[in-house]
Image 1 (spheres, rainbow, N blue to C red):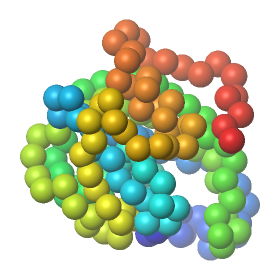
Image 2: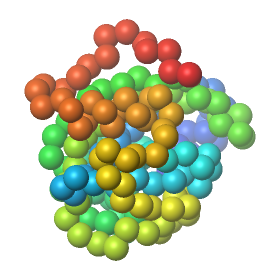
Image 3: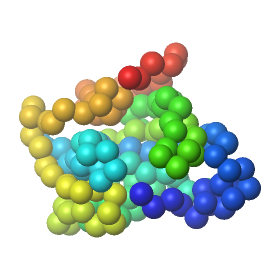
Image 4: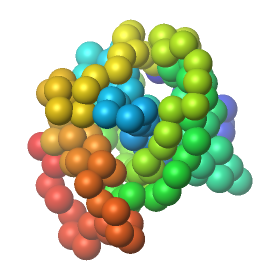
Length: 161
């Protein structure tokens, strides 16, 4: 997966030490269907996700990531939840943990397809026929699709497995 330039620059200075990063997830819907990507690195189905660049608005991150990963245009509707991920260790030894901001988004247009290599597949699924996802991603999607009130804020670590 491509590493943003600002993270590459930080890694030159701090090596594999833990980084606290901000990320965003786009739960993209069009009527009764949801757009998901199959991650090229893990083979898992997920919403579109991305690291927020320094100074970038989270909604702008998701509009950019939707184009880069899936070739689609989206409208970001609203923040649905915030999550702190479990600490991650990447294959190269880099360590990170993310504050994820999940948004409900509306499909505007474009031909869904893998674009930048982060996704091996991009597909629409019926809301009642989504593929199996990891617990953390499944919960982000569930909350985005069902929570019509204020955004959900996790109060305690959820212990994702």
